[in-house]
Length: 350
Ligand SMILES: *Cc1c(COP(=O)(O)O)cnc(C)c1O
Image (cartoon, rainbow, N blue to C red; front, side):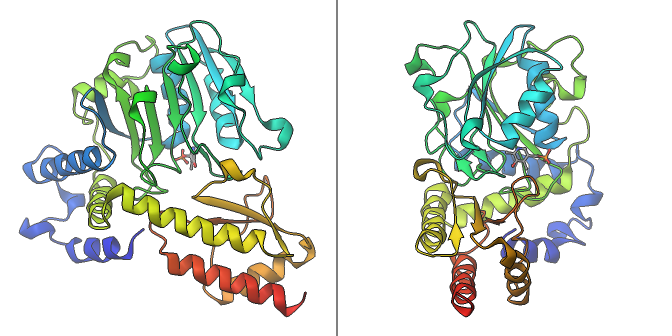
């Protein structure tokens, strides 16, 4: 979270803009909250340049719930294609199987998920209801630098993108997307809010068993207020959107993210101790997994980092090693502090 946003929320906690209420105490149908909601919608649409024929939905359940909600809404009883590029796309694939006939169009599992299969090699099934990718694999640190252009591959299948850990870190090419979803807690705000951006022509095709609160058309027709939305999370996300605009928008944030990632990858590549195994053309700008060539030094590395105030560097348990998540809100000074520590640690006992 940007510090500025936390400070602003703290100031407004007890009395939002002289309303005499905390945002948590407002009716979601009252004029105060409606103004917060509308501002957040408008700011996000502007920031991400979301075209008018897409709906922006504020939902709940996180990325994991969307793994079920997407097939419930879009599979139409037909085939669904998946590209497996790491833990998150695997999870999505396993969940979708409950609701649809699922096919793997491509997988990079044989490389240990350190590369991305070239879209030209994907085995797209004929007439699939959609194709799912994860645009940034948070655990494996693999990111699509460009979304696949399915139309150029001669395929009209809508592309579904899990952009939970990539959203708002770079511009989005909506011309290639049917639906994108993401939990808010990586780049947009606190947990509890799930963002869904969906092309209007994909609405209204949900399976009869789809819960009403998860039916995109129902949610869209009710301005994301079919049920009570996560009001406080939406409010904080709205403050993050304003903060992003003050930073100069997504182009400026992308430039910062590029510089942050380059600083860290250069430090890893130019060391004798640290190693990142992801192919250069698909290294994530948000999540940088790395290993110590001498794994017996892992605990000492983490303890020393903690002593410097560098927290949460332990890698995901499924891959081990270390992982630095360097989301939008982390300033370049944070990455510089990590890189300085890594150099010092390497030199102290080479
Ligand atoms: C964090 C994450 C999720 C999980 O979302 P929840 O909000 O925990 O359900 C899904 N996909 C990706 C790519 C993620 O990084």
